Amino acid sequence: MKQSPKPERPETFVEGIIEGVDVRPLVVRADKRGWLAELYRGDELPAEQHPVMAYLSETLPGVARGPHEHHDQTDYFAFIGPGDFSLYLWDARAGSATRGNCMKLAVGESNPKSVVIPPGVVHAYRNIGKTPGRVFNAANRLYAGPGRREVVDEIRYEDSENHPYRME
Image (cartoon, rainbow, N blue to C red; front, side, top):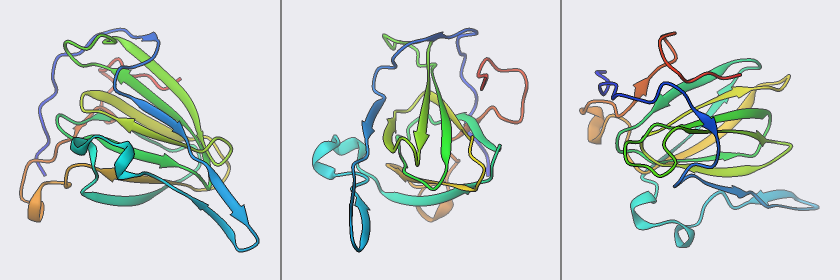
């Protein structure tokens, strides 16, 4: 699939919050049967962020996914386990009040979180555990559009060393 072109981005980033990124604790309710965690609620999200598809991925220990970004897609990640991850975010959006900021979060089994990542925020995560880790995502856009016939809304940086998005 053809991918979106790479826009011009800041060359350096500083640690700080990123406008539009919403990080919430995931509350795990356990009883004698097992456990339950609400991953998202439509009454807690703006309509433009409501998911239209969802997927579950597994990432092997030490492996990273990203960095990449989307022009139009909002990702709604839930890191609940198994596994722990380092999540990296970089605000590369023109006109954003927090452009040039980056965030690193510890998320997953030992710190369950949901994270809303708006378009233009570059993101990546690495499994920092010893076992395969799982991540849930409910995106507000269909991958490659209806019928998988559109350009993929994903700008990938992980295959190039010529980018400022460092996972350290």
